[in-house]
Length: 389
View 1 (cartoon, rainbow, N blue to C red):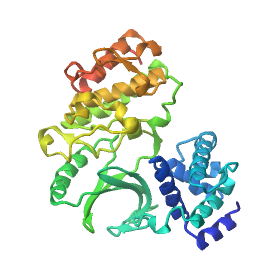
View 2 (cartoon, rainbow, N blue to C red; view 1 turned 60 degrees about the vertical axis):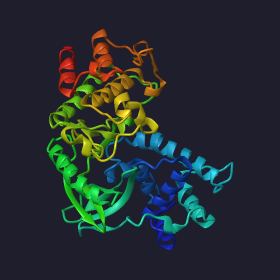
View 3 (tube, rainbow, N blue to C red; view 1 turned 30 degrees about the vertical axis):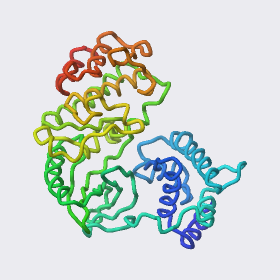
View 4 (cartoon, one colour; view 1 turned 180 degrees about the vertical axis):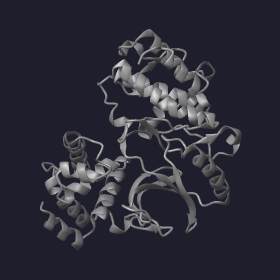
């Protein structure tokens, strides 16, 4: 589709951002999963008439990926998933397929069919907060918050940032908001933890503004059936634990360490730990926002037993890191691994690994938390003593 045609359709019906949100709502209705930021970047570029190379060059979210990966992996799977969703919704026929060339047509057919009312579009989009932060995309929704991608209009080049809006508006939330943001601000002093840029209250909601990290989520590197070499896994474990050492020395438990919350930063390939929405400060643990719950989806695979019942420890983060290491070594999803009669994972037969590293990983993921490394400091020291670079 030519750019002129796309622009005409956009102005006559809805903007590209409204179309993306419309598709996101439709996908979520059927799959309970939102479109990823990278998928939204592909859609935005394709309906704007861009090639994958142009998307990669111009979109900051896509910049950290190869053109081949964007087209053959992200784009291919996106069109396949959208085809399934639109067929189930009765938008396209059984023999039709969604491809880049007919994407806009499929969106318009969805609107005309009345699959969703257009007023279901998120009213936060394009909103300007604090006369500074312009909301551009809805990224993720959880039980406690909504996270958006925004532009800072007060700075040159309008850099991207993340805006998190808490769903609760209670007085207790106000008290917790003040205390928790102090912890987040302290953590953000580390080079590999997003900086807390602002906190404020507007229209009865509490907002947090974070530094946006340009890079690739670790889960996109952990491909099923493609195990990593041991030296790669060791480097990854050290990278993650180096950040957690700082976190744990602040007497803070992250509680949500998993591959979606680990970003390989484009600028230096270092691992950045994000999303401290579930942080728990040890000395105020009884005041924390809610109790940790066992979560659905892939995140649940990284939660140790004590955290699942609402009693996380520093070593709960170590368990999650160990699971990531085992996932990388085996090329298997955590839920595919079996456990012995003590509740410990059986994984070594599925990996090529030296006994020393296997022993460290086994200790990181022991079912009984008192037997694990007590914090990131001890776990990192154990890896450093292996003598492998």
